[in-house]
Length: 315
Ligand SMILES: Nc1ncnc2c1ncn2[C@@H]1O[C@H](COP(=O)(O)OP(=O)(O)OP(=O)(O)O)[C@@H](O)[C@H]1O
Ligand SMILES: [Mg+2]
Image 1 (cartoon, rainbow, N blue to C red):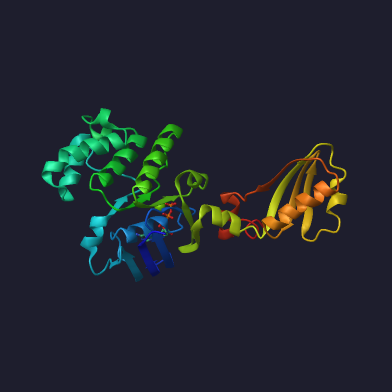
Image 2: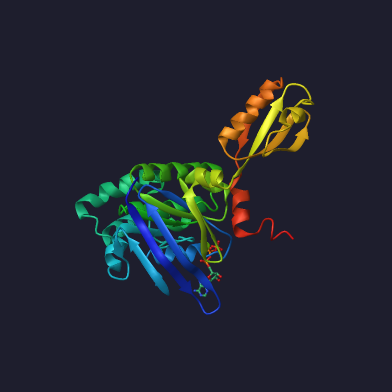
Protein backbone atom coordinates (compact mmCIF):
# COMPACT_ATOMS: atom_id res chain seq x y z
CA UNK A 1 0.00 0.00 0.00
CA UNK A 2 1.21 3.48 -0.83
CA UNK A 3 1.36 6.52 1.41
CA UNK A 4 -1.55 8.89 1.80
CA UNK A 5 -1.27 11.81 -0.60
CA UNK A 6 -4.61 13.54 -0.07
CA UNK A 7 -6.56 13.59 3.15
CA UNK A 8 -9.62 15.69 3.84
CA UNK A 9 -11.71 15.93 6.98
CA UNK A 10 -15.23 17.33 6.91
CA UNK A 11 -14.26 19.42 3.90
CA UNK A 12 -17.11 21.80 3.12
CA UNK A 13 -17.88 24.62 0.70
CA UNK A 14 -21.04 26.61 1.27
CA UNK A 15 -22.53 29.14 -1.07
CA UNK A 16 -25.55 31.24 -0.08
CA UNK A 17 -27.92 29.05 -2.05
CA UNK A 18 -26.24 25.66 -1.87
CA UNK A 19 -23.69 23.56 0.00
CA UNK A 20 -21.54 22.58 -2.97
CA UNK A 21 -19.28 20.22 -0.99
CA UNK A 22 -20.70 18.80 2.20
CA UNK A 23 -18.42 17.43 4.92
CA UNK A 24 -16.28 15.23 2.69
CA UNK A 25 -13.79 12.78 4.22
CA UNK A 26 -11.45 11.50 1.55
CA UNK A 27 -8.13 9.67 1.63
CA UNK A 28 -6.21 8.99 -1.57
CA UNK A 29 -3.09 6.83 -1.67
CA UNK A 30 -0.11 7.38 -3.93
CA UNK A 31 -0.39 5.70 -7.31
CA UNK A 32 -4.17 5.75 -7.16
CA UNK A 33 -6.15 6.93 -10.19
CA UNK A 34 -9.36 8.00 -8.55
CA UNK A 35 -12.40 8.64 -10.70
CA UNK A 36 -14.70 11.21 -9.18
CA UNK A 37 -18.15 10.66 -10.66
CA UNK A 38 -21.37 12.50 -10.16
CA UNK A 39 -24.11 14.29 -12.03
CA UNK A 40 -23.96 17.96 -13.02
CA UNK A 41 -23.79 20.13 -9.93
CA UNK A 42 -22.63 17.30 -7.65
CA UNK A 43 -19.66 19.35 -6.43
CA UNK A 44 -16.80 17.71 -8.35
CA UNK A 45 -15.24 20.91 -9.68
CA UNK A 46 -15.65 22.62 -6.32
CA UNK A 47 -13.90 19.72 -4.55
CA UNK A 48 -11.02 19.65 -7.06
CA UNK A 49 -10.54 23.41 -6.83
CA UNK A 50 -10.33 23.22 -3.04
CA UNK A 51 -7.76 20.41 -3.26
CA UNK A 52 -5.74 22.53 -5.67
CA UNK A 53 -5.71 25.45 -3.15
CA UNK A 54 -7.45 27.74 -5.66
CA UNK A 55 -10.69 27.86 -3.68
CA UNK A 56 -10.71 28.35 0.09
CA UNK A 57 -12.94 25.88 2.00
CA UNK A 58 -15.75 27.16 4.22
CA UNK A 59 -14.91 24.48 6.73
CA UNK A 60 -12.81 21.38 7.26
CA UNK A 61 -9.23 20.39 6.57
CA UNK A 62 -7.21 19.42 3.50
CA UNK A 63 -3.79 17.85 3.81
CA UNK A 64 -1.66 17.20 0.75
CA UNK A 65 1.38 15.01 1.45
CA UNK A 66 0.86 15.72 5.14
CA UNK A 67 0.81 19.49 4.74
CA UNK A 68 -2.28 21.48 5.74
CA UNK A 69 -3.08 23.65 2.71
CA UNK A 70 -4.00 26.60 4.92
CA UNK A 71 -0.64 26.48 6.64
CA UNK A 72 1.52 26.31 3.51
CA UNK A 73 -0.41 26.75 0.24
CA UNK A 74 2.75 27.49 -1.74
CA UNK A 75 4.36 24.23 -0.66
CA UNK A 76 1.18 22.39 -1.66
CA UNK A 77 1.04 24.15 -5.03
CA UNK A 78 4.50 22.81 -5.83
CA UNK A 79 3.18 19.27 -5.65
CA UNK A 80 -0.23 19.67 -7.22
CA UNK A 81 -1.10 20.20 -10.86
CA UNK A 82 -4.66 21.22 -11.65
CA UNK A 83 -6.22 21.00 -15.09
CA UNK A 84 -9.47 23.00 -15.21
CA UNK A 85 -12.45 21.74 -17.18
CA UNK A 86 -11.92 24.35 -19.87
CA UNK A 87 -8.25 24.84 -20.46
CA UNK A 88 -7.52 27.68 -22.84
CA UNK A 89 -4.73 29.87 -21.70
CA UNK A 90 -2.34 31.97 -23.70
CA UNK A 91 -3.60 30.94 -27.13
CA UNK A 92 -1.23 33.38 -28.79
CA UNK A 93 1.79 31.40 -27.74
CA UNK A 94 3.28 28.57 -29.72
CA UNK A 95 3.19 25.23 -27.93
CA UNK A 96 6.89 25.22 -27.15
CA UNK A 97 6.69 28.83 -25.90
CA UNK A 98 3.80 28.02 -23.61
CA UNK A 99 5.58 25.04 -22.12
CA UNK A 100 8.77 27.06 -21.65
CA UNK A 101 6.69 29.64 -19.83
CA UNK A 102 5.13 27.06 -17.49
CA UNK A 103 8.48 25.39 -16.83
CA UNK A 104 10.07 28.72 -15.92
CA UNK A 105 7.20 29.91 -13.74
CA UNK A 106 7.31 26.65 -11.79
CA UNK A 107 11.03 26.73 -11.26
CA UNK A 108 12.38 24.07 -13.59
CA UNK A 109 16.16 24.75 -13.69
CA UNK A 110 16.88 26.71 -16.87
CA UNK A 111 19.43 24.24 -18.24
CA UNK A 112 16.74 21.54 -18.08
CA UNK A 113 13.86 23.46 -19.64
CA UNK A 114 14.63 22.68 -23.27
CA UNK A 115 14.88 18.93 -22.69
CA UNK A 116 11.86 18.78 -20.42
CA UNK A 117 9.67 20.60 -22.95
CA UNK A 118 10.73 18.22 -25.73
CA UNK A 119 10.08 15.18 -23.53
CA UNK A 120 6.66 16.38 -22.49
CA UNK A 121 5.59 17.22 -26.05
CA UNK A 122 6.56 13.70 -27.00
CA UNK A 123 4.73 12.26 -24.03
CA UNK A 124 1.40 13.80 -25.06
CA UNK A 125 2.04 13.20 -28.75
CA UNK A 126 2.20 16.84 -29.78
CA UNK A 127 5.84 17.11 -30.81
CA UNK A 128 4.78 17.61 -34.42
CA UNK A 129 2.77 20.69 -33.35
CA UNK A 130 5.48 22.37 -31.32
CA UNK A 131 5.56 25.45 -33.57
CA UNK A 132 1.78 25.80 -33.89
CA UNK A 133 -0.21 28.37 -31.93
CA UNK A 134 -2.14 26.93 -29.00
CA UNK A 135 -5.36 28.58 -30.16
CA UNK A 136 -5.26 26.58 -33.39
CA UNK A 137 -5.33 23.16 -31.72
CA UNK A 138 -8.37 20.94 -31.78
CA UNK A 139 -10.23 20.33 -28.51
CA UNK A 140 -8.59 16.97 -27.88
CA UNK A 141 -5.14 18.39 -28.58
CA UNK A 142 -5.90 21.31 -26.25
CA UNK A 143 -6.71 18.83 -23.47
CA UNK A 144 -3.40 17.08 -24.06
CA UNK A 145 -1.56 20.41 -24.10
CA UNK A 146 -3.21 21.20 -20.75
CA UNK A 147 -1.86 17.93 -19.41
CA UNK A 148 1.57 18.84 -20.80
CA UNK A 149 1.58 22.11 -18.83
CA UNK A 150 1.22 20.02 -15.67
CA UNK A 151 3.79 17.44 -16.65
CA UNK A 152 6.45 19.94 -17.61
CA UNK A 153 6.73 20.84 -13.93
CA UNK A 154 6.54 17.23 -12.75
CA UNK A 155 3.71 17.51 -10.22
CA UNK A 156 3.32 14.52 -7.92
CA UNK A 157 -0.43 14.83 -7.87
CA UNK A 158 -2.68 15.67 -10.78
CA UNK A 159 -6.22 16.98 -10.47
CA UNK A 160 -7.95 16.69 -13.83
CA UNK A 161 -11.44 18.08 -14.29
CA UNK A 162 -13.20 16.16 -17.06
CA UNK A 163 -10.08 15.69 -19.16
CA UNK A 164 -11.74 13.13 -21.42
CA UNK A 165 -14.79 15.13 -22.37
CA UNK A 166 -14.84 15.94 -26.04
CA UNK A 167 -12.13 13.45 -26.95
CA UNK A 168 -12.55 11.05 -29.82
CA UNK A 169 -12.00 7.32 -29.14
CA UNK A 170 -8.42 7.38 -30.37
CA UNK A 171 -7.58 10.42 -28.24
CA UNK A 172 -9.25 8.74 -25.25
CA UNK A 173 -7.01 5.72 -25.62
CA UNK A 174 -4.05 8.07 -25.89
CA UNK A 175 -5.11 9.85 -22.70
CA UNK A 176 -5.69 6.55 -20.91
CA UNK A 177 -2.21 5.38 -21.83
CA UNK A 178 -0.67 8.62 -20.62
CA UNK A 179 -2.54 8.36 -17.30
CA UNK A 180 -1.58 4.71 -16.83
CA UNK A 181 2.05 5.53 -17.46
CA UNK A 182 1.90 8.42 -15.00
CA UNK A 183 0.30 6.24 -12.32
CA UNK A 184 2.97 3.62 -12.98
CA UNK A 185 5.53 6.31 -12.20
CA UNK A 186 3.90 6.77 -8.79
CA UNK A 187 1.84 9.87 -9.54
CA UNK A 188 -1.51 10.21 -7.88
CA UNK A 189 -4.37 11.28 -10.08
CA UNK A 190 -7.91 12.43 -9.40
CA UNK A 191 -10.02 12.69 -12.51
CA UNK A 192 -13.62 13.84 -12.63
CA UNK A 193 -16.28 12.73 -15.04
CA UNK A 194 -20.01 12.36 -15.27
CA UNK A 195 -19.64 9.67 -17.92
CA UNK A 196 -19.53 6.52 -15.86
CA UNK A 197 -18.33 4.08 -18.43
CA UNK A 198 -15.25 6.24 -18.91
CA UNK A 199 -13.96 5.20 -15.51
CA UNK A 200 -13.50 1.52 -16.21
CA UNK A 201 -10.88 2.61 -18.68
CA UNK A 202 -9.02 5.16 -16.66
CA UNK A 203 -9.24 4.45 -12.98
CA UNK A 204 -8.13 2.10 -10.24
CA UNK A 205 -10.62 3.56 -7.78
CA UNK A 206 -13.89 5.39 -7.95
CA UNK A 207 -15.78 7.76 -5.66
CA UNK A 208 -19.36 8.83 -6.23
CA UNK A 209 -20.50 12.33 -5.45
CA UNK A 210 -24.02 13.63 -5.18
CA UNK A 211 -25.36 16.88 -3.73
CA UNK A 212 -21.92 17.65 -2.33
CA UNK A 213 -21.58 14.39 -0.42
CA UNK A 214 -19.20 11.52 -1.13
CA UNK A 215 -21.17 8.28 -1.30
CA UNK A 216 -18.56 5.62 -1.75
CA UNK A 217 -14.85 5.37 -2.41
CA UNK A 218 -13.17 2.10 -3.16
CA UNK A 219 -11.44 0.01 -5.78
CA UNK A 220 -13.70 -0.36 -8.80
CA UNK A 221 -13.74 -4.14 -8.37
CA UNK A 222 -14.66 -3.89 -4.66
CA UNK A 223 -17.51 -1.49 -5.34
CA UNK A 224 -18.89 -3.83 -7.95
CA UNK A 225 -18.57 -6.80 -5.61
CA UNK A 226 -19.67 -5.00 -2.42
CA UNK A 227 -23.05 -4.09 -3.81
CA UNK A 228 -23.78 -7.71 -4.56
CA UNK A 229 -24.84 -9.45 -1.37
CA UNK A 230 -26.85 -11.09 -4.06
CA UNK A 231 -24.81 -12.39 -6.97
CA UNK A 232 -26.47 -12.54 -10.33
CA UNK A 233 -25.39 -15.64 -12.23
CA UNK A 234 -25.80 -16.27 -15.90
CA UNK A 235 -26.36 -19.94 -16.79
CA UNK A 236 -26.40 -21.49 -20.24
CA UNK A 237 -27.49 -25.13 -20.66
CA UNK A 238 -27.56 -27.47 -23.65
CA UNK A 239 -31.25 -28.20 -24.12
CA UNK A 240 -34.17 -25.94 -23.19
CA UNK A 241 -33.30 -26.32 -19.51
CA UNK A 242 -36.53 -27.93 -18.35
CA UNK A 243 -34.62 -29.76 -15.65
CA UNK A 244 -33.12 -26.60 -14.14
CA UNK A 245 -36.01 -25.57 -11.82
CA UNK A 246 -36.12 -29.10 -10.37
CA UNK A 247 -32.38 -29.07 -9.77
CA UNK A 248 -32.72 -25.88 -7.72
CA UNK A 249 -35.56 -27.24 -5.62
CA UNK A 250 -34.67 -27.17 -1.97
CA UNK A 251 -31.68 -24.84 -2.42
CA UNK A 252 -31.90 -21.87 -0.06
CA UNK A 253 -31.32 -18.35 -1.38
CA UNK A 254 -31.38 -19.32 -5.05
CA UNK A 255 -34.06 -18.10 -7.42
CA UNK A 256 -34.56 -17.94 -11.16
CA UNK A 257 -34.87 -14.33 -12.31
CA UNK A 258 -35.41 -14.93 -15.99
CA UNK A 259 -35.42 -17.76 -18.50
CA UNK A 260 -35.02 -17.54 -22.23
CA UNK A 261 -34.46 -20.79 -24.07
CA UNK A 262 -31.38 -22.34 -22.56
CA UNK A 263 -30.25 -19.08 -20.94
CA UNK A 264 -31.10 -18.40 -17.30
CA UNK A 265 -30.40 -15.51 -14.95
CA UNK A 266 -30.26 -16.80 -11.41
CA UNK A 267 -29.99 -14.74 -8.23
CA UNK A 268 -27.80 -16.30 -5.55
CA UNK A 269 -27.76 -14.96 -2.01
CA UNK A 270 -24.31 -15.08 -0.49
CA UNK A 271 -20.88 -15.33 -2.06
CA UNK A 272 -18.89 -17.41 -4.48
CA UNK A 273 -19.14 -20.63 -2.36
CA UNK A 274 -22.91 -20.52 -2.91
CA UNK A 275 -22.35 -20.16 -6.66
CA UNK A 276 -20.08 -23.23 -6.57
CA UNK A 277 -22.83 -25.11 -4.67
CA UNK A 278 -25.31 -24.15 -7.36
CA UNK A 279 -22.98 -25.54 -10.00
CA UNK A 280 -22.64 -28.86 -8.13
CA UNK A 281 -26.41 -29.15 -7.69
CA UNK A 282 -26.98 -28.60 -11.41
CA UNK A 283 -24.41 -31.17 -12.44
CA UNK A 284 -25.69 -33.67 -9.83
CA UNK A 285 -29.17 -33.30 -11.32
CA UNK A 286 -27.80 -34.12 -14.76
CA UNK A 287 -28.19 -30.65 -16.26
CA UNK A 288 -25.81 -30.13 -19.19
CA UNK A 289 -24.14 -26.89 -18.11
CA UNK A 290 -22.39 -25.06 -20.95
CA UNK A 291 -21.56 -21.88 -19.09
CA UNK A 292 -21.98 -20.54 -15.58
CA UNK A 293 -20.64 -17.10 -14.78
CA UNK A 294 -20.99 -14.29 -12.32
CA UNK A 295 -22.47 -11.13 -13.78
CA UNK A 296 -20.98 -7.97 -12.36
CA UNK A 297 -23.30 -5.11 -11.57
CA UNK A 298 -22.53 -2.29 -13.97
CA UNK A 299 -21.07 0.91 -12.55
CA UNK A 300 -24.07 2.64 -14.01
CA UNK A 301 -26.51 0.59 -11.87
CA UNK A 302 -24.43 1.08 -8.75
CA UNK A 303 -24.28 4.80 -9.36
CA UNK A 304 -28.04 5.01 -9.79
CA UNK A 305 -28.51 3.09 -6.53
CA UNK A 306 -26.13 5.33 -4.64
CA UNK A 307 -27.56 8.59 -5.88
CA UNK A 308 -31.12 7.39 -5.38
CA UNK A 309 -31.94 8.12 -9.01
CA UNK A 310 -32.74 4.45 -9.49
CA UNK A 311 -35.47 2.69 -7.56
CA UNK A 312 -36.71 5.54 -5.37
CA UNK A 313 -36.35 8.25 -8.01
CA UNK A 314 -38.28 6.30 -10.59
CA UNK A 315 -41.54 6.30 -8.61
N1 LIG B 1 -18.99 30.38 -7.33
C1 LIG B 1 -20.14 29.80 -7.04
N2 LIG B 1 -21.15 30.51 -6.48
C2 LIG B 1 -22.33 29.94 -6.15
N3 LIG B 1 -22.61 28.64 -6.36
C3 LIG B 1 -21.66 27.87 -6.92
C4 LIG B 1 -20.39 28.41 -7.29
N4 LIG B 1 -19.63 27.41 -7.83
C5 LIG B 1 -20.41 26.30 -7.81
N5 LIG B 1 -21.62 26.58 -7.26
C6 LIG B 1 -22.72 25.62 -7.07
O1 LIG B 1 -22.18 24.49 -6.38
C7 LIG B 1 -22.75 23.27 -6.87
C8 LIG B 1 -21.66 22.35 -7.34
O2 LIG B 1 -21.05 22.85 -8.52
P1 LIG B 1 -19.79 22.15 -9.22
O3 LIG B 1 -19.37 23.02 -10.33
O4 LIG B 1 -18.78 21.82 -8.19
O5 LIG B 1 -20.45 20.81 -9.77
P2 LIG B 1 -19.85 19.69 -10.75
O6 LIG B 1 -20.04 18.38 -10.05
O7 LIG B 1 -18.47 20.06 -11.15
O8 LIG B 1 -20.85 19.74 -11.99
P3 LIG B 1 -20.57 19.51 -13.58
O9 LIG B 1 -20.65 18.01 -13.81
O10 LIG B 1 -21.70 20.21 -14.23
O11 LIG B 1 -19.23 20.08 -13.93
C9 LIG B 1 -23.73 23.69 -7.96
O12 LIG B 1 -25.01 23.76 -7.40
C10 LIG B 1 -23.24 25.07 -8.37
O13 LIG B 1 -24.30 25.86 -8.87
MG1 LIG C 1 -17.58 20.45 -12.99
